[in-house]
Image 1: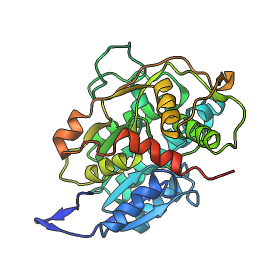
Image 2: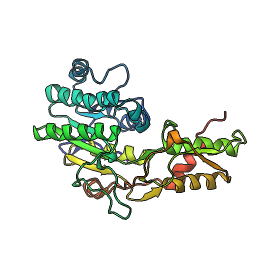
Image 3: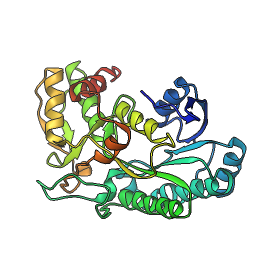
Length: 307
């Protein structure tokens, strides 16, 4: 349940400006906020997020009570191919939004979505990452998000009400097949329907990640938009590490199939281990994951359209 904004102890409708509003996460967030009765102004590709003057114009016109900045280049694989464009969107886009807020909505709560990847990788068996741990990004995507996160801290030090959100891996129906869970789900569903005859194409199955259902992430964002919650950095994480190979095994078991796999060199990345600790978020808002892992995977499989 998305927490309502409050004024003098009473619920009130607020105006929220959302970037990346038609994306995988943004579309869900805008629907949820609208369902809560808020006035949602969503923008996406019609506003070039790195055009500081254009972003400032839209924020000035919107006069928002809150800003949720979700627009991003979110694919790690694409970031390896296009590092300059990734920095341009993820860092300079964040700068344009933060500066527009400073100039035209200085009292707005700004939800700045970065990434759990800003911490880098930990040794197996290490405790989950906490917000006080140093940032050690290990990829072009993670570095672009770490820079945006540090920029958000700079604006917060100047008085802007910034919440830096560090979500770990999340998935659900509608996510691009460039991400591991939907990539596997599409292949497994096709096998189950007899549409796929070749081997399952996979990358590194030994990495360990922290996965959430996208709807749990949306709930966290809604709670953090409430200005009564203290600003600062917040992990959004399950605290559970899952091996990528186990994710694939779970999908195959749900679909009731067994299949040969083939490692695709184009998909292989170095083995890493990243799990987050969301204790700070839980203490501040009461949030905790609600969607069972099996349900997340079942929804992914059910959403795959026949070929």
